[in-house]
Image 1 (tube, rainbow, N blue to C red):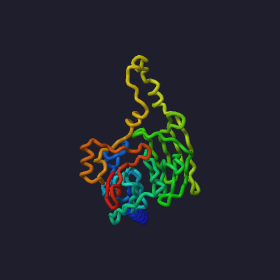
Image 2 (cartoon, one colour):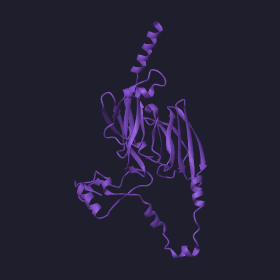
Image 3 (tube, rainbow, N blue to C red):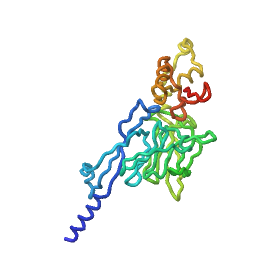
Image 4 (cartoon, rainbow, N blue to C red):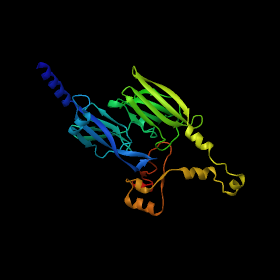
Length: 302
């Protein structure tokens, strides 16, 4: 009888332990950068199943909550059983959401994360102690970096690498296997089109990075099977110079992508057929600025 009572007590204790997980939902392609979707964060909170195999049945007791006003590229972590933290999308902010009080707070991204290249998006470790990302240093080089969050202490940093900025699903990903180990894969162009695979293991407050670079067989194969254009046909076609090609490849956003613009200004830009050119390197929305350009104290947009 005492054993049965003890088993019931253990089961009750397990049921009282909260289990928190997150899910990314409702990705909107029209609000994404270079094909990367911005997601709402759905939080699932419920009791743990007392016995293995009952998890699916126990889901009917969970509470589902959606973090308001947040769109993220996917960098989200659960801290304990009371807090969800993450990095926003275009808003360039970090956020934390208290599950007990249902309050959301935001803060500007640290300066060192403002250099991140969001292809692939940065990734927070479980429990939110570390963040991994590709970022540009002051010397202009791009390196794979792991830092403590939110302090920013460098845990690991790679040698310079040259990523190829590609849209998903070809842009790669960074994911944590657990709180002490990660994997990353992304396209590079250090010695021709290739694919970098990174494995990191945390030990003694530092992380060792193991690199392997494979040839991008798919890209090389596509190049190999491109039809050979006869010389006569090529000569008849107008030749595109490097400046025209560069202008054609620039990503441009419509004025409607900038809600901060005054409506009359945005409407006039749209009427004129204007678009706002974007950087293909940093991955951040930009080239819309406000200041006193025409006269001191005057608020102007450009």
